[in-house]
Image (tube, each protein chain N blue to C red):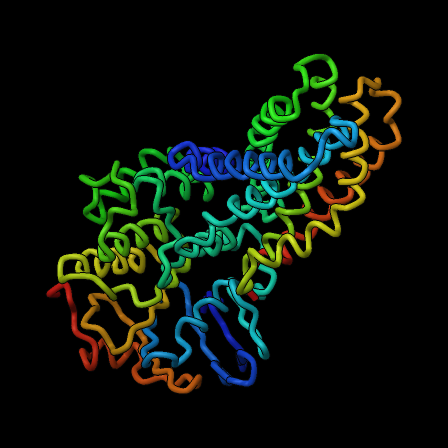
Length: 233
Length: 217
């Protein structure tokens, strides 16, 4: 059995006196996906930021590739892609320039070609030379997905990847998520409700008041229980 | 990283224009506020020049990191394999370039406003201003990584930066006044040593500490 890509042990996070996460235990194997659902303020984004190493937990610990996320070395950060509420994009750079910049940061071979490839994959090839500040929220979301995935990370953290997207945009992102899992990446995504996406197996967790509970496991998903395919499979 | 910062700046010109405008405003205010006839004009000019540089330096350092706060781009950088020390080096270089542009503009304005001449004494300002710019950019870039995370950080930066910069500021003003008065660089070696020590201290501190202060938690 392969080592887990993500593992959290009694993870807790408190802002001031307000607990956001409480004793969260999560385990994700290579090539598998999980959806974490919950309402606003449930702690979904905080959980992803801690797993990404952008925030430190108040208690417990999070391991990614077996490494504590509080001190993730560059070679492990190289293998993580994150799509957050904020796009991490520079409004005054064009779509291509943004992707080229991130491709260079991640030492992607031929950043220009990679940028153009991913612009085509997210349906923004015609907007390659448009500055991001002129993009709609949905277009920025798609470009943010391309930014997160262009280095083909082994772990994808997606914070509400379908927010602000129309049906076509959601299909594009769903196909990219499926593609990532098919090539062996692990995916943790958040959503307010279990989305109509699959084509691949997802474990589903619900987070409420900072506590995480598994609501559906991969076997249930395989039986076609709670998740339906957005891709019409 | 630096190429991206310069591209953003060339595209908007916001920082350079703001720095030049601020330098000019400070010099204009000081030239009218100070009675240059009662003290040596080179002393007043040197003081005015450094006041302009400190203010423009703070603006430059703030702006160098501001672009990374838009859309949370700083998180994208921290998540990437980029060494935070390299991020500091790039931001320091960007702040230094912005400040150097402001310095050139400020020196030209100072010479014009204080009726000085463009001669060898003005040229001797170059190493002094370069040392001052390195020290102040190093300090302000490090501090702006802290203050940028706080509410009212723009206010906090000068409160933290100026007192710490005082030793280098005194040395810079004294050396600049001596240079403008025609003294050779060798005669101001002690002042320059203070500035070099300040630069080494804060470039090293920034390089080592930046990763601990630039994060969000």
